[in-house]
Image (cartoon, rainbow, N blue to C red; front, side, top):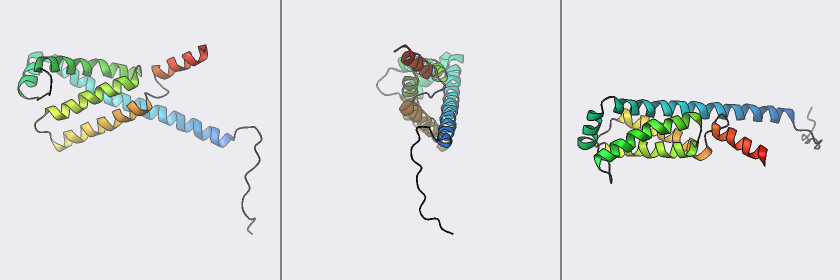
Length: 159
């Protein structure tokens, strides 16, 4: 038996418990996804920076002979690239200046792709994945499980 169209219950002033529950689940899932993206991308770039430090003379030779970094002298590019790969992932993991760290690593990522004369398709896919994750973090921030969120909540509480 058809009871006709369903009516929306009148607003009672109490939040709909299902919507509150779903919002809470969504909020925590987004927090977890942001944290996992930050950890994954940070690991990739930090390990790359450590590799460059392990044998600095080889790193300098690669920047002089192999990598074609536009606009920068090879030695300066090596220093800046390595510093970015070591410092920005730490900020990203902490979620401190998350958008800044994501944008900075995006620059490092783009420069890595542009500076190689040839790049294997599998390597390019890796750079595209990192770029997509970094874009997500740059647009939406480090998420609720970050120092940025904690500091923002403290700032609001003081106001």
